[in-house]
Every structure is written in structure tokens, then in C-alpha cells.
Length: 259
Image (cartoon, rainbow, N blue to C red):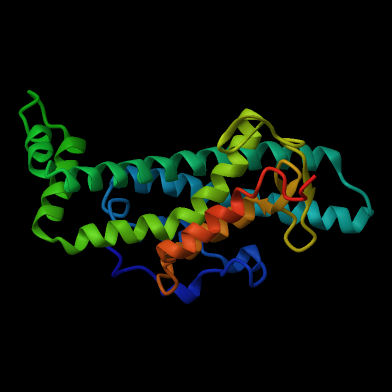
């Protein structure tokens, strides 16, 4: 499923600067997601990731144009910024839902494996519906492949760890933008949800991730897209200990200053 993908070095590495949009292949984002087990083999998930990738290219052009206008006119062009803000937020919502769909499916399959239910679920999906249901057939094949090859279970567990940081950061800003809440704290009001500042390196709108009095960092739509592209690089899969430390950093003490 990943043998035809370009090498990982073809994609940007978040934290090492932003590449020029014209140097980023449109399929890089799709290939990042397709490297995940149960994603690359699903034609319908791939179709949605193609949509995400194509719109990503469109928005990167908007980000570049906004930054160029800002430098040329030495002011924020509000019409461009407002349109970019709308496009950016809609893209983040779509990216979140696609990643959430895959992660939930992966967790459900692992739960079936743990409970010894893969065979029963596959048989249920294979029951005659009176018509050909390609989606059910494909799901059943995936389950039987995992029954035949236990290494795929380990791969799926690894893929969930591989996407955890990217997804958690995406979820954090998605909750702020869509629900005006702090992720994991439904009663906590988000700080300035939807307000973004122009990143002076790539033109994307950056949103502040805050949890109470703590500022956890900034995140932009471009950051999320680059992190998804980087999923094709499997050389740095986080360990459970890494994820425990990351989760702690995203949920600091309620009163870090001791007042």
C-alpha cells in the first residue's frame, strides 16, 4: 500500500521552516494519510484526502498572496485576510473529520482484535444484502487480512501513535474554532476563538493555543497540512512515553503560578 509512495524526504518537515508552495507536490498530503494502515487501502478515504490536498494547494496560494500584499502595502488587507480566514477554518474542520474518521475506525478494529471479534465482524459484513455493497466487502477484507497477519495489528497501533500529536493539536484548535471551548474542558471558554495573525514566513493565519492562563503555542492551517504530509516519514514514531509527556504539556496545571 505504500510501496509506490515518493520518499519521505520529498515532504516538508514541520519545525524546519516552510517550503515554497510550488515545491510541494499536491499529492504529498494524500500520500501522508495513505501511509496509514486502513487508510491507503480505502478508496473513499483516499478520495476525501484528494479533496483536502487540492484545496490545500488553493489555500497556500491565498496565504502567499496575503503575505505579499501585506509586505507591499505595509498593512493587513482585510478583504484577503477575511476570505483566507474562512477558507482556513473550513479546511481545518474537514481535515479534523477525516483524521477522526480513520482514527475511530482504527480503534474499533483494535478493540475487535482484543476481544476476539474480528472473525464475527467480518462474517457480519459479508452477509448477503441483496445487492453488491463494495464498502462492506472492503471492510471485511481488511479484517480478514489482519486475522491472517498479526503484524498488521502492531502496525495499526503504531499508526495511532504516529498520528496522535498531529491529531491532538488539530483537535485542540478545531474545538476552539467550532465550539469556542478549550479541548477536553467543555466548560472552559476559549480565548479569542477564530482570531488569527499572519505568519510572516508563509502567510498562513496563526491561532494561539491557550489553556486557561497558559499559552501552549501557535498553530496554523499550514502547520497542520505540513504535519499530515510528514506522516509518510516513519523514522520518528513516538513511544508511549513520548505521548504521555506530550499530553501532559497540552494539559498544564490549572494554577501553574501557585496563586
